[in-house]
Structures are given as structure tokens and as C-alpha cells.
Length: 173
Image (cartoon, rainbow, N blue to C red; front, side, top):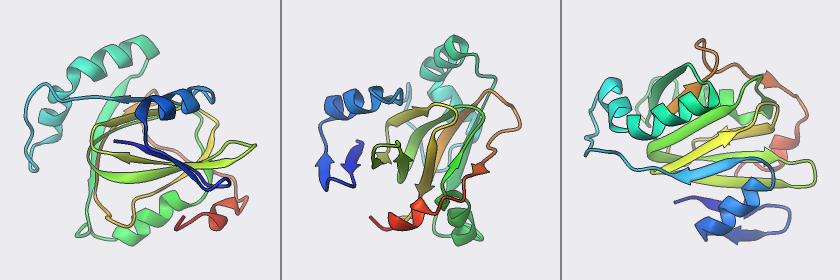
């Protein structure tokens, strides 16, 4: 379950409803989803998407999303540190960034203008970040993330790096 850190205030919030309410104030959606059937570590992308179709299908239809896939990395993934670095710099997207954590964990950092917060997302957590939000993502220290990605643009993830440098102040927080 998600953990919210108000980094500039040194506060941690673990109550899911409080996290949901806080993020809703910034139009970031977070929820908990469950698979419709048991999954195994080696299940295919097709099987994983089928297990969550009861959640993904209605969400995609309601919000006009066109594509979904599954990304999976672990400590044995070739070039794992280079993959991590790709996400560590503050960036925005022209479309929403929508993720569901099938397994593993990762931390989203948000530059909300008035503060910087992080949200540790773990297995079962769904998050939708509106287009244009300044954020970055860290898959350390565990380097294990299996997530469903949902897109409006079938070409997928495209980052627009801000080069603000603010991310350097929070890496490892």
C-alpha cells in the first residue's frame, strides 16, 4: 500500500484515505486494484492484462485511453541502472501518466509548486498523474517493478525534461 512523504515538512502519511484525499487536492488519482484471478511471476503480458481487465477496461473507456502494456524490470534486467536514470530527472508528459503496480515498488516524486512530495507505490496501487505535472520516478532500492501502463498515445511514454535540477535535492529521500 502507498506511503506519502511530505518531504519539505518531514512528515509521512500511511493512512490510504488521507493519502487519497491529499493527492486528490492536486488532481492526482490513487486507488487500490485487485486481480480477478491469481497471477504467477512468469505470467505473460496478455494474462496480466486479462487479470485486471475488469479495472482497466472501464477506466480506459471512461477516460479515452487507447493502449495498455506491462513493463517489468528487476535487478537482473540488462542496463537496469541506465533505465533508472531515464526516470530520475524531473519531467512532464503531454498526456496523463497512468500506472498500476502489479508487483514490486517504485517512488513517484512530485514538484507541486508549493512543495515536493513522494509517493511510494507498491503492489496493488494504481496512480494517474495529470498531463503536465512535474515529477520523476525512482525504482531503487529494490529495482523490481512490474506495472501496467495505460496510454492515450499508443506510442507510449514520452518525457519532456525540465532540467530544473530540483530532483537532485531529493534523490535518496
